[in-house]
Image 1: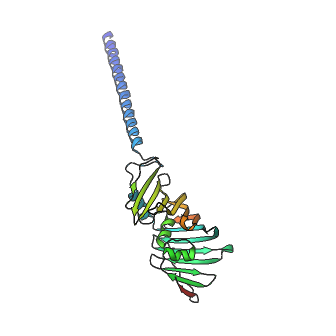
Image 2 (image 1 turned 180 degrees about the vertical axis):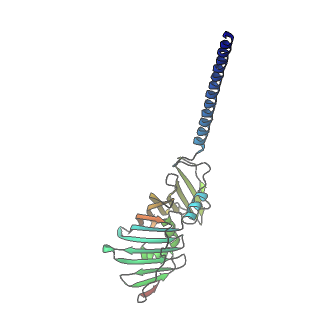
Image 3 (image 1 turned 180 degrees about the horizontal axis):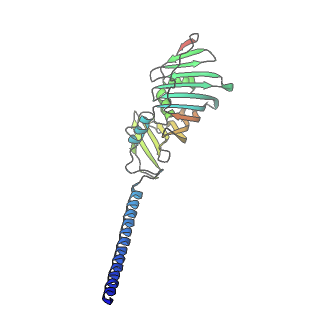
Length: 279
């Protein structure tokens, strides 16, 4: 009987030692799992993209092409102002843009009265002066737009600035040495002009575009600000365009911008009774 009790006691001691060993093994496994998880988390943290800071291996062309391909259509409404030689004109507008191909712009004055309507493609422009009931038709060149709007912008320039892009595409830019981890500066030389863009990683878009001639004189300088997101695309709501040589500015302030809306109109038919004039 005593021997039997001793055997039971011995078995219980062995069992406790076994549980203790398992307990130490379990603690060791837990610690190993935590260490492994901690290492994995640390590794993920160091390689993850931090919003607002330059990602690894950033390429301007790839970033802008991706954004451009995603932005099929754009609708904006707000106010615009044109100032030439100290004389300023202001109006409200509603604009629709399909890619960079078709632009429809309706300009209204006081009491929301339409004063002008512009329908433009890269090859042709209708500018309807509602007050004079006259349609001006011609090539959408900087000279013709300056005649009607007061600023030397082509159809492509206006389309790019409304989209928050640099005219002339995204190729050929070379990065300058970085002075900030939230912005990058890129430079391109073409057609006897130098173009300089500032890309903000916080805004995920261009915030400045400057074109200078071979003498270093500024031909046009555009600044984008007040960015919003529509359909996961970063879009500037405000744009300011400066033309130092002719002492002119063109600014846009949007109350609302929306990307990739369906069933928009991008052209209009001038009234049949309107007078026709060539630009």
